[in-house]
Image (cartoon, rainbow, N blue to C red):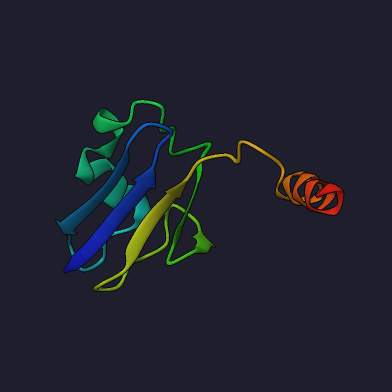
Length: 92
């Protein structure tokens, strides 16, 4: 069945179209894809993953057309970034 695998690294983004077994899990797709060789910083057991923006466990079964996403940690706290922007706009 067709699925996509997406990872946005700091320096490069990968979007892979894959054909996988009907009962494939997120972990199996990640291992089969070769993305860990392309992005050695990926540790599937510490980074979170999901399907179409919803967090899922590594043993979650996939459906045809799913987009598996590997999420890296945030660089900045979103609330703190918003506060800085609001403060900057208030000063302008």
